[in-house]
Image (cartoon, rainbow, N blue to C red; front, side):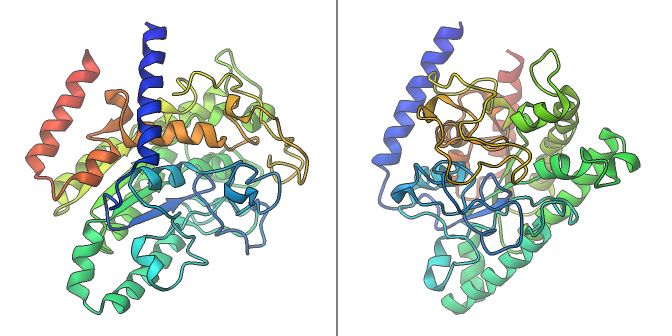
Length: 383
């Protein structure tokens, strides 16, 4: 069965990789807005005083031109790959440099170290929290209104765009599981903390909806306890990962589906979906040639930049064989695999109630269709 599954993954990988090259001249959505942390940051942290900053080699060694742009990887992020799959020919610009009419195609607000909670990541220095990212998006919306000259037209325009939001990893890595720096683990049990995070996240996502977002993909958290950094700090359990971290993160992920259901039921024209990052992050890499799953490709240590690559040291040569680029972040190859399964689900549990491709191509999908797809997903999951 495993070999059959791997063969299916490889077929999907090759077909979708081909689609990146032969993508249609018209994007599937008019614009693509990205909210998140270092997983999607493409330069917003470059001007901040922070340890969460990677605008130096060997970062970007496989990016076009070999440039260290501020992406926390050797090449493209999953957001970059997703943009290509959606049909965009250019990368979505970071908010700090986005200007003029280019914002009409979208903006990336991602920031390394950022979290749902405002204090998250302060141990690293400067970062742009989700609250601030939403304020920055409000500035972008005003700029778009200025460019288009019509509020009603802008509202209709933004309702057709795709929004991806991936937050919460730092609320665990750089908050809850740093008891010397933060008090959250003394205030809340893991279950209570997940509730606190989801309540705040819900309010933040509703702000995004009020700015005009209708097609929103919420990325769940991956297996944070399987990162080389966390294993180095806590030691691996029998699973090979830090179980207490993965168990705490799972409590947060379990609350996202009900949140999606609530939004889709109670917010007019809302089409929120959940992307199960745990399902396609480390346990089942899409490309069979990924073989190194717990060692970073570059020379990295927790003594430098909190697990980032040390400057100017040569990384591993077989980068497509590695999941991890540094102690926390994945390689371009792993990012492609993750983005592909987010765009077109390989398994029913990869997304809920639909994948990103279905969301992008939907046009004010009636609630009954969403409900039918949700029921179908649940039935398939039981099989």
